[in-house]
Length: 188
Image (cartoon, rainbow, N blue to C red):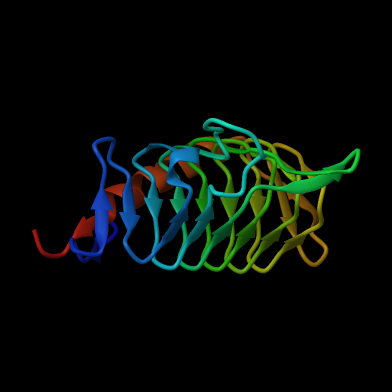
């Protein structure tokens, strides 16, 4: 059994659906961000829900699934481009059981479920990461890259290294659930 990861109860806000969000994280435009439940947003993370398409009303800018972990110092911002002379942001969708390492910058269009992204990575604009993929620590993934399911990418620029085993889904799901269970308040 892994030892618990303790956090100060005063530093994290826990929602009704079990999300744990650090007060030291910057959540801009929270009305445009959806957290699926049992997701941990670590200290120093920056999630830019305020960067959205122009126009009235609410728009989902960043959607995270269940049991996601956003590491310390991560920056998540929606991808953008100029199309027919109009500058626009596009939504970012992240599946369930996604672990994003510390100090990683994410501008992906889509990240599937059961995905591990290492520390100090850059995920370029409009990248699509399929289910059960892994991005090694320090990888720079160029914009518009498609990372296939069950693939390990590494390097700068990020390239295919090897196929991952079929058991990756169960392994990552067990890891993210265990991480959430271990994440316990120090001062009860």
